[in-house]
Image 1: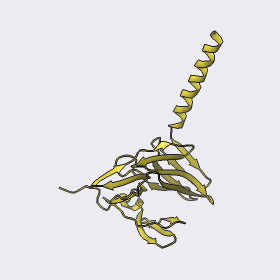
Image 2 (image 1 turned 90 degrees about the vertical axis):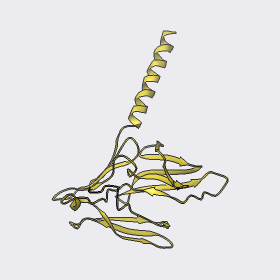
Image 3 (image 1 turned 45 degrees about the horizontal axis):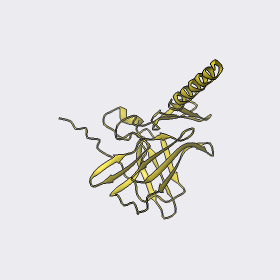
Image 4 (image 1 turned 120 degrees about the vertical axis):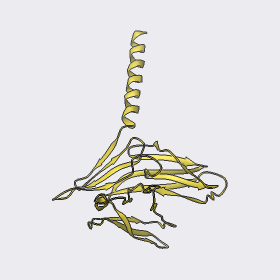
Length: 196
């Protein structure tokens, strides 16, 4: 009887420590870059390692602009789904029967997101707007901070694919591509900050 109780206790402690490890920050590492992912499933930062210095892609870490995040706008209200861990560096969320799965991966040595949307509802999903907020901090509010901010410089929606890039005023470039078509893209120019 004592042996069974000890074994069950050890098993419970093992499950508890596993669940604590799953919710911790994940860091995907490559010789040229490092991607930090928070316990909420959103990106914290993407660092490209250079010979002279590192280049950090800033992400919103909390609030409505944190990302990547799956969202939908219906009847004038925007809803963001929380990520649920779904494997190593993989998450899922759901809004009105539409399941979104996201995985942070390495693709040909580059950081990438694998995103899959599935409508599990028996009816077509027709919100005013739905999509994936990347969460990259593009807001250039003051000098000299804006030199490190990436801004969408070219974004192109094609019938068969999507490509584009973000660039900093200092000339650093981040490319974005999708092998699948993307219906549209947008950027939040004003985050609600205003000078008095």
